[in-house]
Image 1 (cartoon, helix red, strand yellow):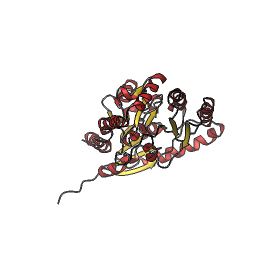
Image 2: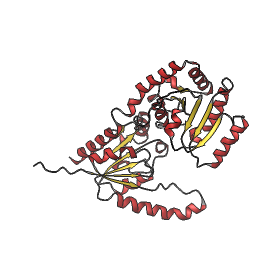
Image 3: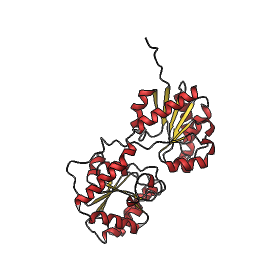
Image 4: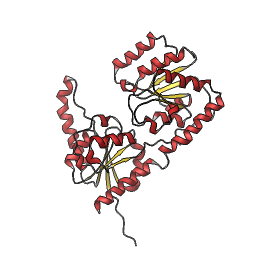
Length: 341
């Protein structure tokens, strides 16, 4: 009888599980898994927040302490203040973290010498992180985000619907105001197009600004704020062009979920986007954006679909083959065995 192999214990700590939840099953195959939500505790801004912040922070510390006890590996999704806390509490554990975007611009005061592995989702982030924290050299690994191409699939009856979509949280960084302004210039040459803005907003003043901009530009019939939608795949099926107007992103997954559903991705030239899209899908200013949109609609329908299919065939395997969920599980386990031996 072969001796029973004991899996190492992996504790995954997260404030939001949107990006890490697809990895749960693969982690379970290789590790004994603990899955714990840890509250995000940004510095207080309002008077009431200053009163409650000490209690929230104490609660967070207690939960982090007990959630990371009795484990072999601690995985912190988003390299934020939770990582800083873990790096100082659990130096004897193997510590892994993953950066998505904003952490790179506001790195936590972590003990980076205690961090054994850092996962980034594009190479641009990896290079910049190493410049900011040189002692992480040799510990940074790039593993792209995962796109479930089985779920995000094309509709059986593909049509051109004259619709462009911008999907994601409505916040200033995402450039919705710039998208609306650029779209107004396109309407001067093609009045049949519609822009769908899909997503929720936590910034009411910015939402009010966007609504005023639409009214001022006379775009009420062509720009629709759809809010949160239950069936995003259905929205992608009705979308001809999926957009990114962000100042910066790590991947902007909706571009590639949309592409997998048959939409043509167009992105502002935020740093790192060239790792994912060819120059023909990246715009530098409103004039370039207008040219690319009109060029797409000026093509015959068959040619449009061929362009999208060819782009999907060359781009989407990055997010699915090899499967990033399996790659990440393997790399964490390999690193753990190296440190143990």
